[in-house]
Length: 531
Image (tube, rainbow, N blue to C red; front, side):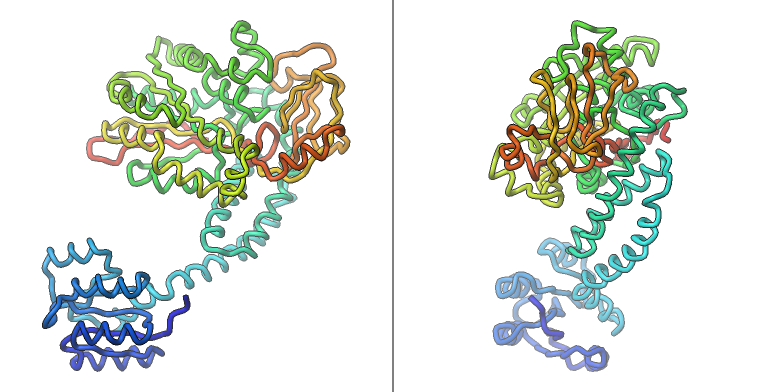
């Protein structure tokens, strides 16, 4: 509702505020006055006002009592207390009933104007500033699109775009959001070409010449904190995108000092590969060679991720040079109560408490199967909102709150992101091909459009175990999902608009890792090496 540019000033000494009223009228406001609460309510019932300036100490009802009736008439009415009372109890009462601002007389006319402007026009002013800043920055970002970016520059670029995405969505700027999405779409082709060219080099060359990957999370981020602190809560939220982390960070920052870093997921960007790599510090072909009894078929997700706790303990022992206590739990929403009963004892001990939370991954998978989930998570903005709503009441936040209470540092990350898929890509395969929608292993695999996927002939060059003669890997690029020509319409109808993962996009591969140091007194900071 657009409110008129009018002010209702309620004060039993309102005649003494004539200079203030003239100043506000010179600024374009119409100022109505009331000396008593009943007169003010009568005026409010007759017409809407932009804002109410309210004295606390008046004959009859107090200003604080009047606020309740004002809000009953108009719950959105901004109310500013302008009073002589410096009593701390009055101030606390005003805060308790959510008064919009509180000023103590004497006040200057410009002080009043400043508060009114902030309350009535602050959102519009901020939105205009955001739009100007984005338009200026967008030209610079668009100019970098064709540049030969290095891995650090890709991270900086993609992180900035994710932050703009969240800010523009929150400020309801659909036109600018569309321009940003166009830029993001155009970048995905460049990113796929970059990964196809450089990923095998990262794996073949010296470790220092590549970005931190899934296999480096333990050495780069986890071990330095563990060695400094002795105790650590390690949280992995499956399938969390950068933009989702952006909206969760503000829920975490009141509890912790947040130090952000980033890394690249290995490919395929799917749980059996990426999360095992985090917990083991090994590429899939190395896990298969060291623990063949733990590595089954590439599509057997449950069995492939059945030994994460053991892999983490093994990795930490190699990195630290001694056994490290690891308490590992995979948490579904139903397991919150049991987890919170065990967690205090876990956090009281030296070593690592590792928790894996699968809700976001379940949400993205379930969205393809449920019409209700599809409606409530229709696009990226809706998915962010749903993720935030879940997080506010989730066992993740409860676990972090327990860590903060006990002064335990936490490390929060994810194994891969997801991409909103709109474009079907026809793939030809034999019957033995895996069923995944963003990556496929199989013999004689090919796509109708050569640009639809990265074709990997030498699986070992991508850190993957060999799977037999003639088996190759297809990794979907951009927002594509694989469909077979025999079930083209069925797959298009079922999966178009889904959030999927396993392929090669910035949204799936460039991931946050956040060091969370408790803010409460006595909890000192610690930082791992970041790049």
